[in-house]
Image (tube, rainbow, N blue to C red):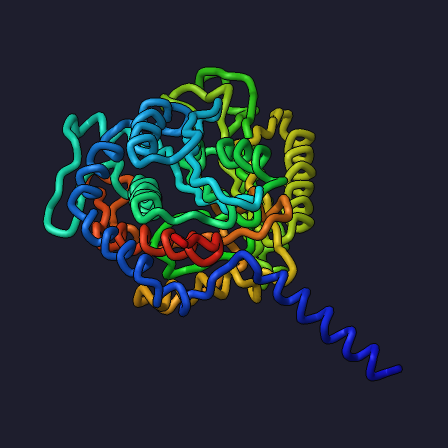
Length: 416
């Protein structure tokens, strides 16, 4: 009887194990496929056209909340490639699909928006980026490298006639820099179908499988204005200084350093002239941890400190949410086929990837929602946020290859 139970259990385990990996291809097998080899070669051949496409897309001024023109440009390219159901939603996210057979979906995500400083540099430059050797130079190029890489991978998959097990979704999402609005919309729409999300931030030198929580606050202080001759107190600056000093003494970052628990005040702003005390000032607050409970504890201590200072000095405080990036960890993520295959792909591309359980980008939304997700990242060039920003063309090509091979393996895309 024991033997029968053992045989039955073994059979069940084998069936379960096969089911867990059904719908995927191993990288070693995929790399022997002539069509996969030709797809990788096609990505190499796209190099010059892709660099020029980066000039076009990266040259569109697209700060967070103003992505519509860039969204239209990306959508046009998706349609030219032959992706199906291309559309721009209200975020505005740009979404295109290679239809699969299972009813499930593997989603690749890039960032559509830029920092405000990038947009300012674009306006000041007054010209489009340009190619200089292996670089596309100019503000707007660094982040848009990821969207162009998605388009390159999508084109190779479509041109070679690959049909995936699962829908392959390519999405360039809005407002990554300011609250993840686009990713939240995308996740709400696809969470029930998604087998995984891949947040494309570079070629895969680093692979994140967990999410670091990040809460940003703008803390306002309000008090009576007045000329120096009428007396300097009460004064919002005294209240801000006292509050910041006490906030920086909150002990959680030292107690839970191993959980990436951090707290920082980076910006303080108030007043405009020497001889008038301001009626308003503010300071930034950046609160981080792998654990939401530590974030909540620190925020509650901040509220207590603000209440204390108000009682002492009569200055009123208000906390304004700037962004709320959720933390999350998924049991077994590091050992999953998604992460392990991503490691192998990165190694194939010549990297020795670092693993991290503390990602902080679009993937935070899907991980916090309980969906297996990774972020593949790397340096994409340099000087982001400066007038001489640039993107590395070779990195863009390798990023496209990573996306292509992930779609082939995890999406089980085949031509026959």
